[in-house]
Amino acid sequence: MNRRYATTLLATTLLATTLLAATLLAAQAARAATPAEATRPDTPFGPPVVDGGWSEAVVSVSSLARSIEWLTSVARWEVRRRGTTDPALLKHWGLPPTASGAEALLCNPGDQSACVRLIRFLGVPSQVQIRSGAQAWEPGGIYSLMTRSRDTEAAFARHVALGYTGVSDPIFFDYQGVQIRNVVLRGPDGVNLAIYERVRPPLSGWTTIRGLSSPFNAMQMVRDRDRARDFYLRVFGYEVLSNAEFLDPKPGPNNFGVPANLVTSVSRRHAILGIGVAGLGDAAGARQMEVMQFVGLEGRDLADRARIPNFGIVAVRFPTARLDERVKAARDGGYDVGAVSEATIEGWGRVRVADVRSPDGAIVQLVEAVPRR
Image: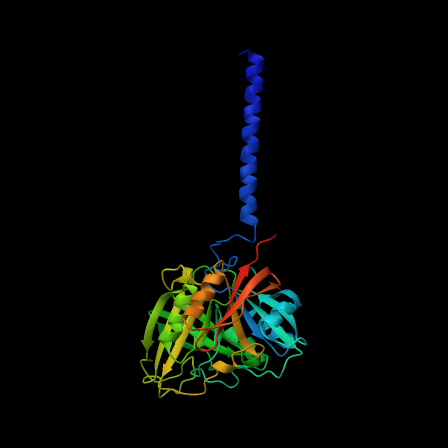
């Protein structure tokens, strides 16, 4: 090999190595800057996880403007999309041909899932609030969407300034060694937002919180804790994170509005459910379900009201690649399952959907992407 050829070969090799390194560094930087990073360490709300739990809540409202004002002012979420509901989806829900829907998708800035989709249905028969004037212990539908905050008192003050109230004023309690400040906000149309502030030990991560985090849990009041829990285990693959029964150690205010003299005798049976997580730590943070039964308190059963287009939290959406399998499991279990339909959902694209009702009326809408042809 002559000296000139060797010099040329060395220079070419160095140039190729430099270009390769630059390409790899650029790719790494692009990945770091991409909003769609699947597992950001500072938030559990990356892109929806297929068969990993619910990733959107659907709320039927009487006024888009009023509910948007509430959520942008109190939660400090942003309007990410506006649009109309696909007529095919309205038909899937059994609504008349005159029906239409105006939508607004609200999300916590910096998060990519666990958004809240508001729908104002028009051209439909009379609507009622699902949980109108409901006490916490009355079963039926979805009681609340749970959020986290670093300043519960400030969020509650913003809520009250708009003319709303709560199930109680903010309270402080200890749950399994974790000290929590909590309040359940009562908003428009019987929609409840629960706020949980970790006081001690402090919450780690979740750096996208500006007012309230994205919802991490959909809570339901039920007639039978075990039956409600097993519905989620059998059909959706949830796992038990906590299954317990508790009483308050002494009389006093509480987050569910139970009379203070009864909190030491009225037992609350609950189950907290998640998918693919080991426990209730910070990393478990998103896509949970919780069911609770009050033992010894009775009231109305609101399950039959929990139907679209009635006002309130009408459904959560569960992305899946196994829709037919989950529909079969639900039907085999004797649960109420609607038809399988195809529709377009803004932000989801073309999808197949099926609505599965829990024993207490909560609707979980299975959503499966339709392959592009």
